[in-house]
Length: 225
Ligand SMILES: C[S@@+](CC[C@H](N)C(=O)[O-])C[C@H]1O[C@@H](n2cnc3c(N)ncnc32)[C@H](O)[C@@H]1O
Image (cartoon, rainbow, N blue to C red; front, side, top):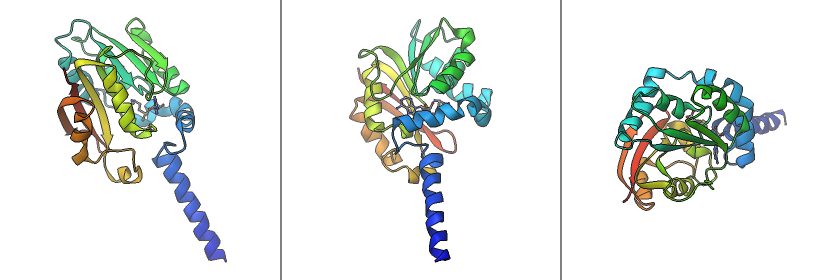
């Protein structure tokens, strides 16, 4: 009897770990995901402890370079969190554009507002859901979405929404989860061999996948003209 109870307890602990820690509430609905991020928002930057030089080398600089031909680019950062992508872009002297950051979590947006305070005239933060972006078609020169697609109800539909608001020829940059944890996120990540075909249907072209962090590939693509 004690053995059975122990086994049940173990299964429960593993389930809780999977759903709340590893999957960050993604199978339990948007409001749970938002709540979990509200709770961690105050500690998020400390936990992540991003290396500024690495961030700029792999995010801000390449994106600013990709947008160099546009005088005042308008960028949308979907699931902006605490403003990681806009901060890296604003550190680039060549980037003279504006960034709109959208996120589900009030707590993450509050931290982003503090982080981006000195760029108030060029950074706009709004609360919203990636599956229904409150913008017209072809509004942005670039759309980014880092470390977040797997926490959305329908990642493929969210990519479709990001492509919709992208100008023809504009860049989409997003991350695709890899590594052992990705195996526990069924329906939320794209196997590497399928990424290109998913994106070609959206319609995107010039698709480039590259290994980025231990847990993520970066994927770049342009909206077909
Ligand atoms: C791991 S954080 C990444 C934040 C930021 N992009 C970064 O790289 O630091 C994931 C973010 O996705 C946001 N998020 C999750 N689901 C979302 C949705 N459906 N719409 C908008 N934001 C969402 C969360 O609130 C959280 O801020």
